[in-house]
Amino acid sequence: MNCSAPYDVMQAVTTAIEVTGLPAVAYPNLGETRDSETHTRRGDAVFDTRLAADWVAAGARLVGGCCRVGPDHIAQLAGVLKGQPS
Image (cartoon, rainbow, N blue to C red; front, side):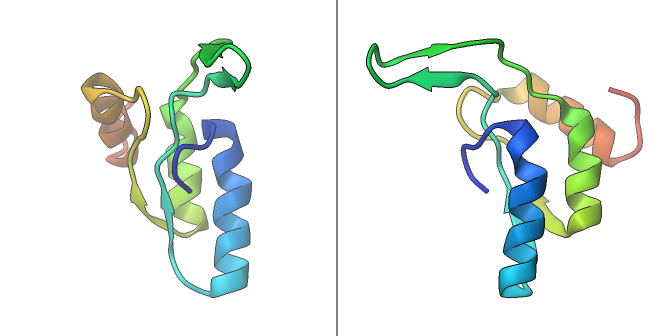
């Protein structure tokens, strides 16, 4: 699951595992929506790193971030996956 909204990842992970029987990859973007007419991003960017523990529990084995997810987000993500509060 690459470059999808963080809140869409769980369904994609579970579906991919059901279909393929293989572990999944979860690399969501920052969570904004893209306006194809103006070629801009809009909406609130919400990268809720707390969701990652559920992705891993569901079978995601590689977890990270895509577009506009930066080092601070990855550090928070690592903390969540190591059991530290975000």
